[in-house]
Image 1: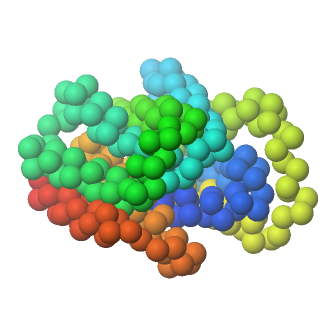
Image 2 (image 1 turned 60 degrees about the horizontal axis):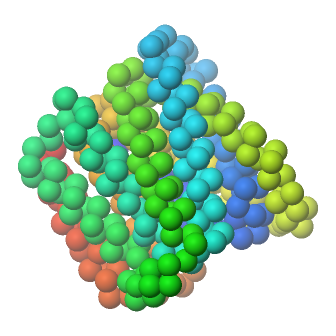
Length: 287
């Protein structure tokens, strides 16, 4: 569970920094900078480790599937944010944890964390939804059925499947560093055609401030921290527990927005924080 929470801190901080840099650079340029930093750090870690990729033998198709599906999920997510309100897209996208948690429990024979841990995972995911959603705005958005809604649903499914595959690779290889490096390489390669096709969106880069680049670079570092923690946790315990704990990341992003951007919470978000804490306690007891 600790590894899942570390992953949540990494990904939650990434989301906050990505929002800061994306508003100044544009979403795809900010993503390109963060991914470049991530692959450089992952390569350095891999070279220092010096264990090679022999542990990944027989997992090539899983690596390719993870990279391609993750790239598609990111593309759908950014498209959803472009078309629809964040109040709808964010909580729907957070549903990725339901997909990944369900796949881990149903498809992996050694995923038997016990009823208390499973209940804790479900409670945590419900709490995350409450924290990440402004329910009054969400109800209004769903009533209007914005075009970004179904893109957000698609991204949630994609992230859930990609997260599940990443966990399977880490568990089977027992080498989270090799997993981290190879999945980052495949993801970056999968992004190249998208970045080339959308190169006209880089028009904001020339006028961006240094803060935008620093935020994008920091987002890449924290994203790598999240993936590393998630992969390491998957090699050491139940993937379902790690995945459920990592789902707390939207709450981290919300907390940072409250502190630094002076955003205000609505009642259901306060309730969600309490539910998340209760879910994590159940995870700790049952893991």
